[in-house]
Length: 424
Image (cartoon, rainbow, N blue to C red; front, side):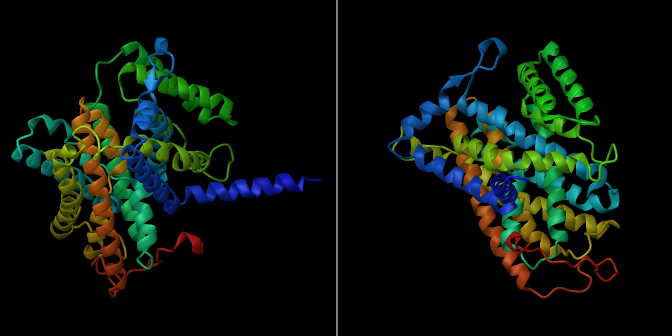
């Protein structure tokens, strides 16, 4: 007979994993971690926060003598990027990116949503005379998938579920482009031997992940080896997470009923959402703006205004502008049940940068002053974009919808509404 206590514990564990994997929960945990970081960094305990953040741990012989904050950015964030890699693989092979015609509009919108913020950032810091900040041009180009989907889940109820698919496709492409930017523009000197070993470990991971009986006690150490040597090579270690995610097959194999991308994501997402992302946010968002040495001066940096304008205005103009041009002058159309007006809140949602933007901010500047200013800009821009997204989502949901929202000459068929996760 089964142990009823063990069954109850398993049931509670399963419910907790499902709860922490919800988009709304993930967004709330990220927000709570950022608020806690700002509160501690501007409290009498800020020296303790700095001490813990700067404490170095790890073996120097393996080039892993990193500060706690660096472990959060290079180590824990690799878990998040593994989930991103798995999502990308699933979408490319069997999801929204599989059919070029349907994916074309959100993909092009993602490109516009990256180019315009970069242009706005460069224009503002140049106009305000801070040429040393130009290295941060990529900071406002990223979209935080978890945060954006959380806002949509809360405030987009009643709107068509196709809007979520459009945002997810756009954000996934956005993250893919951000990963390429990190790999190309934020990689230092390369250690070829370490890079070869990293790729060899990733290849071994791929073989194990596709075998008949993949086991965590084999996959985990191989993944850690690949991550460690990727870090030692000079390429940012989070790239290893993405590549490892791409190694997981997105189609059922060995007679299994579902693709392994779903299984791996289900297993790792709770760790990413419930631990890795909040811890990273706690150590990345802690900027002292009051009571510190020149803390108030951080707020007046050109980089702060540049990031806010780029995240809120640049993203909106890029997404809306490219979509309007593409649907007007080509045969491409928005997906079923989505109209151009729906892209106003989507444009604001893409301005929620947070996780990847905070990472790029840390990679962009060698000095703490610019990094702190960039962090404040990301937090302020994300907050403003989230507020505007929430307001425009509710405005959009209250307006009457037409039978042919995407104006393709056919009546919309998939009009299922976005539901509150609590109702499911």
